[in-house]
Length: 191
Image (cartoon, rainbow, N blue to C red; front, side, top):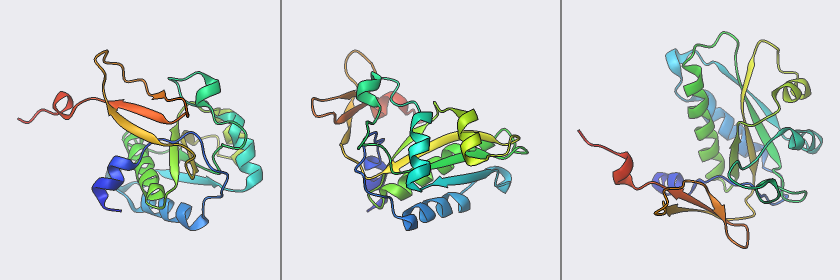
């Protein structure tokens, strides 16, 4: 997939086919994140790849999905849940810029996964104490983000922002996602 097409088609997914994500895809995504840019090359992040069926099942109730939608629409039901997760952890001695590193690495993971047809959802509303316990994350390290992974079971389409100016995503009757985006001219200034 060409880079521009990859960037434009990599969307958030919240319903997944119940097919496992190939370990090679997860390894490639994590390796790309590992070698990516980070502040002062301090490499402040570690990753927990949750791939066993048992552990994936234990992760499911520790996440909150889709702020803009009622839970019955935005939360994946049994049979449409992600089949893998990546938990991103910032090491205790990380500098403040490491939160930027989290964003860079998360996007790298999502793009790499998507290049193999694997969709993702970045989740920040997570039960940190329970995830820490489940994965034995050291107390001094900070869990920053969970990335849900799986083969998408719906579409996600970018649409122009409506006249009302609302950015909330919405679903059609088949539960496909539509994501309003501001116009280029409204967010970019050339000087």
